[in-house]
Image 1: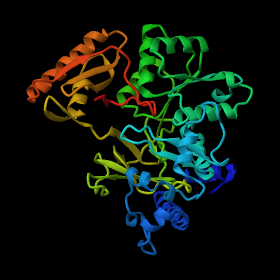
Image 2: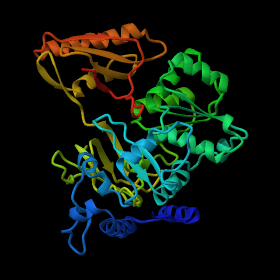
Image 3: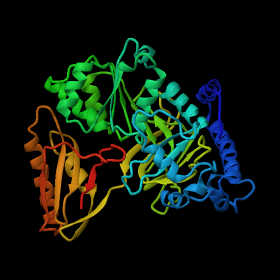
Image 4: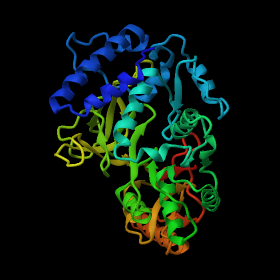
Length: 449
């Protein structure tokens, strides 16, 4: 296991604050070689995959990898021969209050499984300390430190209660680091109704909230209704895409700083706000390559991609090197007054394809219809049968949910009819949006068939 002293991790991250573009290229290449050379010695699977790399290899020489391949070769992929996939999955199913480390030295999470079988991810000391330092020095830049003094202030997490969920893991870690003040750090399950969550928050009176974007939008609407009354001073958006519309809606209502972090179970803290609304890439530690539909790096990375390749230069136990993820992004490299690092704009997952009424569609057109539906803050499309779909969402406080969602269902019904899917039927529901069981995320599209 690769380890690092906490002080050294902090020093390296702070040192990276002053890197020029040329410095970034240099340290990326140095850290890539350190990682790949270690992997070739200790991962039987990747040793074979990388056997034909040239001596002075660069990132583009390294093969692209996908989750399916890693799941098929999990026990040979990891660099610690003691680690086995069954062992990791068993560890992830432990009791939610069990704070023990895997093999007494690793932490572990798993992906949400929204696109298939969840991928278990093990993280070593080096990864955890570097990424922790990134959070402290970059994401929390400009935030009043006293807010995290839990002898005086309270923090509430609205998350998926599971050891496999990274947001819940952050909650458990925060409690471990604040012995004696655990009662000031609580986690509420997102399976609770919004009315129950509002009641609990009003009773707890947190000044900091950590939650998924759809729930932050719902809380903003409850604040406008006058049902939510808490002394909020800071918001941390977690796990999912926080759209520009949602960001402004939440900020306009609460008027407090919103910290946003683009992270993933596989790659860690990829990009984050830095006392601003933009997501700046931590490219001294994580490399993001926007790619086209053929997994080839885009010639113009200012255009939205079909996916990305992620390389985490910090995980030596379960290496993520040129790992494909279907997030659609673009990178802006102009000078930003807030911070020197390039900005990552995220469009979210590539649109889902589905069939309804004998015709094929993607969710792109549905998203366009929803974006122009007045009074709709957040939305979800649920395929309930071969010819049936249901729409759900979060509506503005002043709006009638039945009228808003019913109007959207009517528009989408018309779209399907115009497209020749005359048998398609679209209904609406004012029930809460559905989350993925594995990761607690709220997908825009969900197939129940």
